[in-house]
Image (cartoon, rainbow, N blue to C red; front, side, top):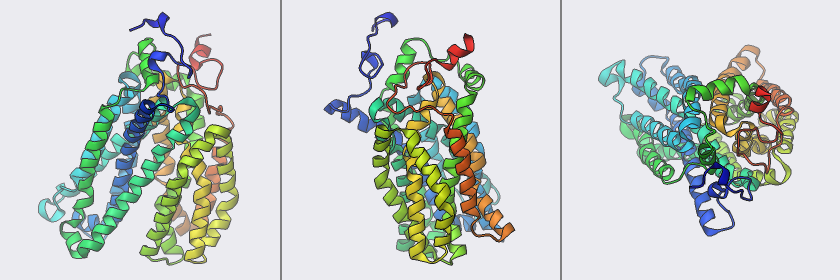
Length: 464
């Protein structure tokens, strides 16, 4: 092994020893495909759980919660995982900067999959009483805690593996995994319901979709353990520039990198208010506003998700050519202008609702496709995992997971069915303000201890 002074440079700005996989060679393509698969499958497992739980709420309510408020308790248990995501980010993020991205991702995917799998094994309330919902809540907390490190770690892993000039394209597949997991969970749950019937589903059939998460998690764990850690992290480790402890990584992040934390928080608020309004709250909105039946609502959302999945890599690739910020400006301004007209259109019937949802989904697409290329680039390598995980999960817990409840409460309180559009518009304004304070990082190297796109590192500024 060469020592620090003997490391030579490669075309991507790093050493030849730790060069990114070359997408133009068969071996490089193979490595990148494995990295994409290892990153995306964790997101798929995470959102598979959300998709299954969302569709199975009616059965979960009757199995675990007695009384007239069973559905409320079941939905509250679903939401509780968001409360512990910031704690997961605080734990896993600094640890990932200390011991490596690969090790943390191997642990988080096993925890996520085990928690989802175990829900399928839980005894009912009739069998063990209040122990049953208590165990369900515990497993949801474990799922949320592991998710706090999963998403930030997977995005960091993918961004650091991807070639600098194609980070947007390769990173976009992380979100393909997100939508694929959500859609697969919903689809398997509904197919089980149609195949087995309501009575069998209430008895034991509801467990089957949860149990599928077990083998999914093992596949993801295997893929992750077969890859080396990212070239960017290994180079930092070789140079002796990584943080000496997880505690110091957290301290360094919070004292030195407040500006990127605040800027990213603004973008995450815009991203997740739109995301959870369109994907999580839209079924409730469509059914309560225009009396759309459940089958039509599911069909609309599934079509929208599949179309977005197909288009995500194209949007990610476009960001490599024109930059991340132009796509974000287009998305934020477009959503601000079109939110009200499209929500008004949705109230006219299924066809109009499909058109309105499609327009808003396509305007949201540039944000979704560039998450894993934009956000990791806001932090230097030694605090990148922690910076992403903590910032993303705190903002998501406060503004993302609460979006459906806030929308519903405001509609009930004001009687105005256009509240979700106004809420999205406000979030987009916050996003536009934040976007002014982030650098353009398309094509730039993520290596080293400086923030990509800035001439000097924040650490150097601090000690100057």
